[in-house]
Length: 486
Image (cartoon, rainbow, N blue to C red; front, top):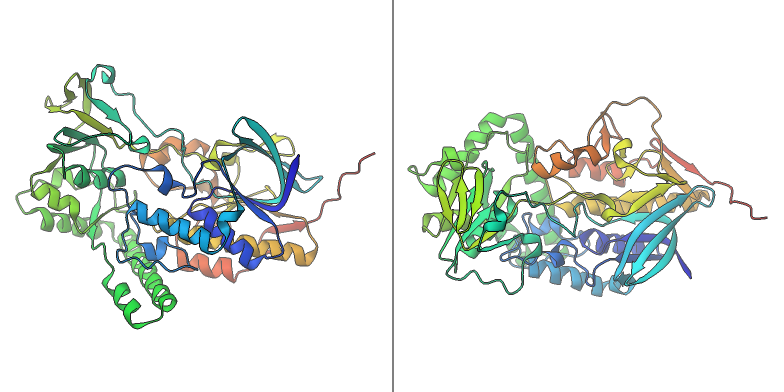
């Protein structure tokens, strides 16, 4: 049996729940379903269970535009975010549109039928779904495996080696010597949390990352909530945070040397003049060549000052039975090693996509407005900002898809396809130097040197372009003749 829907959304995380809301609000006459491979909604916030997991963006921008975040803390813990997601799905009836345990393995587009056919695994059973439009909200990384380097001698280590993406529920680190390998958002989250009960924690990094301390509570936002209606206070706080973030991002990109100096000075103010900030907290790259790491209430720095944790900047020579031997000759004793070494980028949830029988290779296509692909009909993907909250762009993407769907219905068209009308130079989709981006660079799509093929990391600019801009800009609306059956 084949089930048909006007729109199929793949993924029931932040992007998928937001997409469900916009579809039923702005396209109420269209049918939709959300296919989720896992048994719960939440995506990232259901998958990751490591100690201290939290947002590294404020919840006034990571939260949905249509449902205010009312928590006291703007930098929220993972459990609170998951509850917010579940409550949103329940409040708007989106949870009733989700098919859990439905993992999409293949998606095939037929121009003759103007239709996507999806192959879906539900347990041991294979099912088929068809839809007129496919909206991918499956995130950007591989849920089945994180990035784990091939550590020399790891098999000889007598302790426990874990990856945060697959944190064991019964793992006990109390009184143990812990080494956390990495310097990104996961590492700086884990270190102060593990240090509460561990004997000692070392954050072992190959190179430093820019780390910025920020209060976990938004005093202005909380004050506005006391004086204004909830939705008004939330909208004002959301825009405040968007504009402040964009201001600092632009300043840092325009004056990188001055920004670098100030960021390092802020760390020195936290750790004191005698701390070797130059070695452990002064990156070799410019601010925003990689994402900045946020530490709420300066918890990482407080843990270091208290002597409960230390930062070591070195490279791994090999694992030993009792720890890690470093290239400098030093050995770190460890009972537990946490490899907070990042993720593997994977678009489309790893499913195979084809267009009229030809395999779709993202690297051969330009992205259109950061959400569609040149010459690929009726397909959009939610891909958030690298310099701001993911939900901001996912929200705009879902709204834009509803504009396209309504334009197609009004014009009596069945197919909408981005087309390059004039020559455009292609450049990398992401200009980050982060390891997880560089490892996947050859498989990522490209972006163009001009609008609408340029990916703008700017919410205000995208808001006007996607909410008010023309849907006809280098976009082809068509209605292929249905294939005749003898």
